Length: 89
Image 1 (cartoon, rainbow, N blue to C red):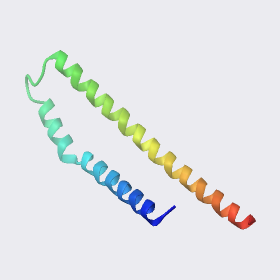
Image 2: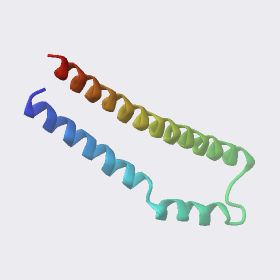
Image 3: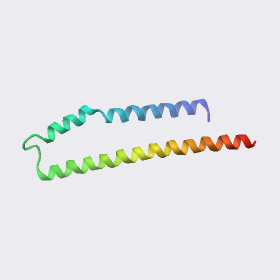
Image 4: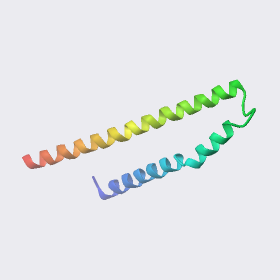
């Protein structure tokens, strides 16, 4: 892999990390918790829509977390395979 490819991957990993941090900011969730407790905040239909979106967000976060763990595990296996193959050469 070239230095250019490695640099591009580093930039993409950094962008993922930055974007995930911005999504996880407590202030957004704190604001939502205040809003949903307001009297008359929403109708039953709107509440169902809101809950569906939150369920979807949770599903995506769990999927991203699993994908991140799987990527790390697979990357470690590739590295281990390369070291083993190199010692046989």
